[in-house]
Amino acid sequence: MAFEIIQIPHDDESVRAHIEQYKAFRLYSLKTAPNSFGSTYEREIAFTNDVWYNRLANPLATTFIAVQSDRIISTITAMGPLPWAPEEAPPAKDPWTPSMDSALLTYFHFRVNGMFTVPEARGQGVAKALLDRFFKFGKDEAVKAGKEFVSSIVVDADNPPARKLYEKCGYVAVSEEPYGPSRIAVLMKYPSSPGKTIVSA
Image (cartoon, rainbow, N blue to C red; front, side, top):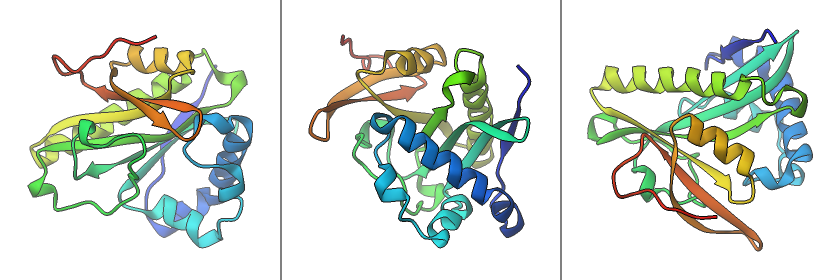
């Protein structure tokens, strides 16, 4: 299955060229898999065009899309660098915050946010290819800053396929906590650190 991975630049022309397709895909994702996100379709369908524009233009948020036949089939957004380590950023912590001076950061920490692949494209390497592209971006940015690259991601405990994908890509679970009335969120970190891995069902 041939597909292209695109990193959406933050300039005005690029954001405007992708905004409608990105918005439609995000809303489709929230409607299709409502238990896979920290947000809801009802919340985001009410967003103004300015909110959608600012999401893609936000210098703290780098969005990657996988495109097949001019159609988005998968996305991830990398938030960072964040002013805290993965273990200091529980699942409920909002990553959409301003970054601090990168010279003051110990790590270049990026949280993967909003990852989703359309059902018909799963199991074909699309999500892994997106993560690999993100890893290259994150590591390159960390090297430029003379910092160590780390990443975190949050997954529902009852979503074994997603967790298996992240483990295959090198993430390890470091904590679990209730998230909302009936969900358990697993915080995962890349790369692993000795003594931080937990074992759970």
